[in-house]
Image 1: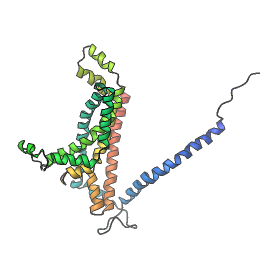
Image 2 (image 1 turned 135 degrees about the vertical axis):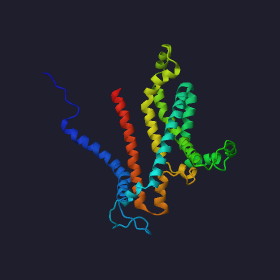
Image 3 (image 1 turned 180 degrees about the vertical axis):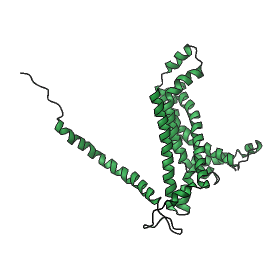
Image 4 (image 1 turned 90 degrees about the horizontal axis):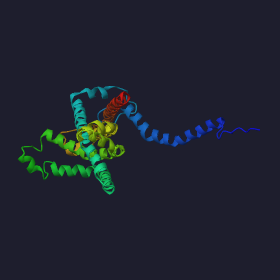
Length: 297
């Protein structure tokens, strides 16, 4: 008499198990809707409200208009938008160029204790207050900083526009380099160093071996670190506010002025939604290019 194996889970119990798993997601989904989705929906609705000067925000029964978005085509706003992306992209690219050798050196050139110490240092820099690091740069390289005599001797005016832009970019680098290093360390650790040794044994110079082996295998992590740095740089508020001295403005500063100084909530909401859409488009395009590269590989 043969006995058949009884399945551990009956098909009739599968829907109940799936239903229980879905119920476990309800609290997380409720929190997500409450603190993320609902404010964004409210912000989007506010961006279409008509603003009446003298009020704080829009009236509850104000009509829906598109004037808040049409005014964003003005040359002043387009200039701030281009300046935000130009400085942010430049700082993110330079940050990648600096962060990758640092991550590689930490993994390949330091002992285990040295790696732990370096990673701890990078974490400390990430957690360091943004105001502390920003005012440290201001005190060092600003118009009253200790580096001013050196700048004057080199013929560089600390109040020139291009110098202020460079100072804002340096402030962004101070923030994005530690983040990028921590993002790249894990990928560099997973690279097989024997591939570099094999390439060198076949006659390839060190720089060629890294360009043909190390960099292509690390490219997904490099792009991820770039996107993280770009997202942080575009949304930076304290750095351009302090180091920009009112002459270099980011979109975040414009949003703050619309909400705080003139109480034009609909206009500030329109700028916020526009910036959110543009940032998502940039991240999507970069991710799409990376995905196409992976499919071709």
